[in-house]
Image (cartoon, one colour):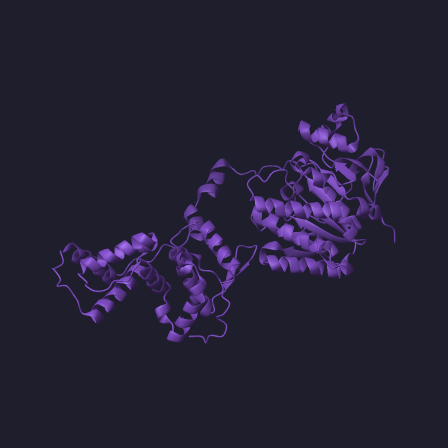
Length: 482
């Protein structure tokens, strides 16, 4: 079996070959503006070497999933798995030498970056007995090895930059040959680009990118203009796996990909203006009905009447009440007031001190005389009522409250909501219920709350790249279901 493939031809028709064994030891950098033919080049390289070496493709745009039809690659949908599952899949990929495409198209940009970083790190950390040779292709590498963090979180940038640096700097000893493709050399971290010994430079127009490309190709800077003049699908090649001197190569045809994609111009439809207007504007209501959620049902007449009666009753001044000093009656009424306040949306998002003042005002209005709970006791009872623990058996309530003893006071309410849901067998997080209990509408605060509770060992959070999140509470497993 030969380890040499042909990726294209020079202007005179001479084939330009690629030594795959040499590529495994020296890595490859591909650069070119959008539309220069980078994806076509990568596809040609992958197709020609598919029978020679294991391939792993990090695909942020879903461009390479069609390799599965022609060459048997396994497509991994990044949005369908949690972080732990992605890492386990990467370990199995190395163990079984499977050629795969990690399709990240269904994820937001930062989720794509974290998913790819976790996958690459797991590939790199595989046991020594699984260090088989593999090509690892990373398209749009400037996303995964950026010079600056940009809009992504700093911890995300450090995570992905470490993964890409390991791939390009230390991957060779582990059998991993990095192939990175980027639109902008200036946006790609230099310590990642510098580790490549083979280069394929396509058309680019920005001076800073042309100068860097010319430097990598060993060209004089006055020759950098040549890079701007390259046609689509043409690249300047250099490296021990290709050629010792820069050559211009036109990339050959491919067998997979979007067969029906139109190249160049297409004839416009010969539709009369009036007919085209009718196609665009006719029956828009039908499209709106398909995409818009159905309106809420109209309230029943009885509900409207009851609402009017309640409003009128509130407008009538209440008759003076005699002070109630019966301890049992006072205690029962205090419990009712706390339960009522816990169900009131306007009270749920107040601060703890404002909630307590609302409670005292209600008690004074009803002229309740007797020992009142202090602010800490009120907050605990308010949290218990808001979480609906009264619906559970006494044994279950006691068990949950014992688990809550180590929870900070201001986090008690959301923890009780999580614990009750976990006891009922619910694993999906109801973020609206947690937000109400925590008194916030910020998804970021909810995420930080869950992270904090997990670090305390109080809950276990399992996040999925597709956005799903499940929560477990250790210690509830032995309790009987209600």
